[in-house]
Image 1: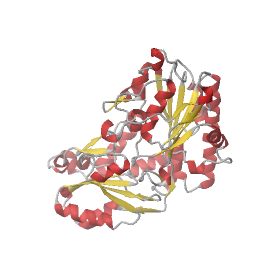
Image 2 (image 1 turned 45 degrees about the vertical axis):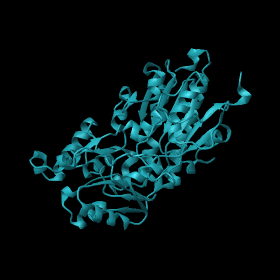
Image 3 (image 1 turned 45 degrees about the horizontal axis):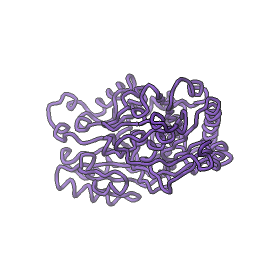
Image 4 (image 1 turned 60 degrees about the vertical axis):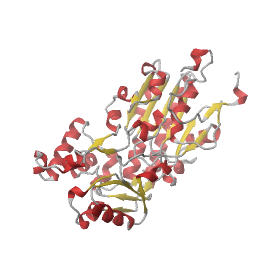
Length: 424
């Protein structure tokens, strides 16, 4: 409900949300990010307790946890479908089928998880929204898994979403922002995240890129003020430099288990397993428990980290590496895609000398790497909660604009107009 429609004035006329993925609070200082540092001293902001996930966007815009919006990596659909006989693709080597899938992905951008062989890929329901967003289809995100988002509450015609991974956002996106009759404009700025993934081993280059992003945010803030909008700055995590990698595939091969006795999905910093035999459960659990610098969890324990799983469909057992450690190879890596991205994207040039990430995130939320934060760059407001989480982002956006949160949003507003500003 729009409170302004019931006679109560909306707090803000319009809001620009710059979702700057990977903006690390530990790298905010007066030298590299003078504008951000100044704003965090003078405007209300709050740290956010994170979720153990590499895709937080659905939670950020719906205000509900992944068990409700249903976007959390992959879900096991049918182990039998993956291990059955007779599929034509299964007669070909994995290197051939994944190369074809990677080519299709590079051409169309619509084929998710291209590096997973078909015999494994068929068992999964892929729940990620990543490529929907990057292909510019925000209308598909008005409701995510049946959960209303900020866009459905405000009304899709009064909202605009844009995804950008351009190296220079000042030149590529600034001109188009703060224009049109939009109440909410959300810019998902991915370039800083990507730059750190592949350049965090070059501290001077990272500092220089933070200065570039800081300059863009300064210019965006000035444009917001000139057009009677407020700017909200959102970051979902930081990045940790990679010190070591774990070859999980090799460790699984060494166990000598039948291929149909387990299923697994490996992200860069974590892995999930489903077991189809007691031998596989016992052997893999023991192997995982012997990996240093990580945490082994059953699905029932995930509620401690904000994901209250009710069954094993998203994973029976999870293993999260500590910051500074990654799995390699993982289910996003393919040699062809790695070569192509290293050639065409200057930010990812380091792929050509080493295909392993140089920085990463997606660990358990108590690590500093996973620090998220939300800042409202408007000194007329103040923080009203002592502790906040990523579930509070959607209610905070809506409340700042004078809208009631959608039914089911479990978070609460982080900001309110400061008492000295009431009635002004």
